[in-house]
Length: 378
Image (cartoon, rainbow, N blue to C red):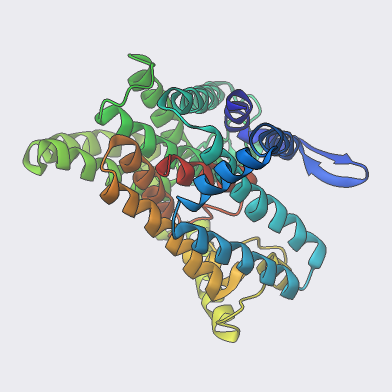
């Protein structure tokens, strides 16, 4: 089952492969998850003694179980009140139920450091290859949609295997934070020199997405981690020099100078204003899953993580999601090691990037989020 979980994390972009099974829409990623969950049940939960052992393992997770239960409940309520029940059911399944079940399955089957390292290696290899393809794409335009070739004030932005640049940035940014922390703490993944090489490739991939929110989140977290290890006085000069070098690269300079004046940033600000208006109309229950897109002419989500959860899953969804994040941070206080710190860094990057983007409500991001919550509790 470890290799099947590894395959799921390595093929997270497989949600883009859409198909129908018995007339019902699904994705290749979802089929892998269903097979994995079924296999976990068969291998771990059959037999009264095994069942009791697994239930005991889940119980030992502690109060996070209550937060997860409230999170799922919020998703169910949001599905019931959604103006479009069928799309909401699809989101409940793909963004809440399945990722939460992956969390519990991962906690049950990863019972050693070696198994966890195996899963993390597969995920790292996949992120590196996706980034490498993006870098090649920058020079060859292979699979790069025409609208991202760079016209007028816009710069060329890579998408790699995804549909748009921010999808790649949302995937890469927290992973860079996670693996950078493991490298800094010399956590043994069995990758030796490949870890820094892969991080450089992933960093270049993230750079070429030209996602300023992702840049900010990763840069801030990296600065804090380096300052914590080496001291701010030693780190700051190198950071300033690196920042100046990057700033004088024409494409980066152009992207930064656009600031809040470009259409994308203006649209984000308009979405945030609109989101606050919608929240005030129904501050307890929100709009329901998918309700924001339906009520706002197809605009999928407000580009802010707090407004995302408040509008899609109501106040209960926002609070329970926040509680899950807090429990991840608490794991570092209880078990101060490289893995719990890296998991906390992952969540921190998600939140920071989530101030200006959509860091959870996608098939790959929701599964990745709950796997990292599991990694903090293994």
